[in-house]
Length: 409
Image 1 (spheres, rainbow, N blue to C red):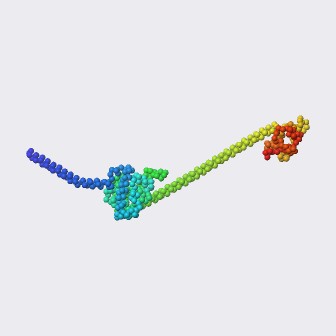
Image 2 (tube, rainbow, N blue to C red):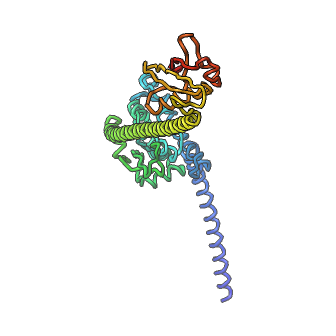
Image 3 (tube, helix red, strand yellow):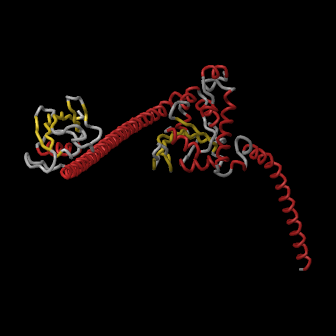
């Protein structure tokens, strides 16, 4: 019994060794077969088909590199294809196409492209490139690099951005746009939530206008693809033109209101200036009237004072007979020709005679200045210099004829 047990153990060890050798042989065979496949896969995922770690992340610098990589990819076809995209005639493309791929496609990230499209009021054409798709290269050559497509992208109000889905930027856009197959084209329209006074927008988003992907896109020629995008662009341009017309109308209305406000302000200032001038004129007139009145009152007071002084100086007329002293009779000939006789004591002076005349003119309301002159014709003599002379000293006693003059006339 022990002999049979030993035989069984020996046979089990032999079988286990055989299985180990078989597994080792299979491992070697699989390693030999799979190593070239792994190398090929790494090759496919390297270079232009699969970016490295430098394309990870969504920073502005990284997303710009992803766009620049796609533009470099398109540029590689520019010298090998013609305007038809399938004949390899590079001279035809160079002569017939005034725009290059570098001019047509942006080399910035999606965020910067979105901001540029919003500022320029442009549609944003987004192409998602799948390097491993069998139709991607043909699509890029025959559609994206075609003269008509490049000319379309270089029109006003259109901006184009291409990126590989093997980059973080491309993966983000594929998820955002819900791309299900490739190649993928989408036309996006800026939609600003807020707008500043200068026309710039903030917190802008994009609305999907048109999308085409997969077989539905690859089976079409450039002449079949472009009309759809051109129609969308024309509608967008019409919308932009209408919005611009409304903006210009609002601007004109704003300018008109501003001009009206300025005219109103100018008219208001003119009215205020007129009111100020009228007020100043009224104040000047009131001041002049007040000064004139004060001057009139002063003159009246001065005249009254002069009259009071004159009354105090007027001598009493002596009687015709029985006078207490020598008497001189004076005949005054007034400027009007009126003759006036008056007796004075010969001891009275010329000033008393002038005071008498001033009282006479005032009481009889005869206009006469205070500057009264006296003179005789025979002999010709004036008595305006020394008013302290008595009538006798002046040679007017016992009688005389005096001519009265207004020296201010």
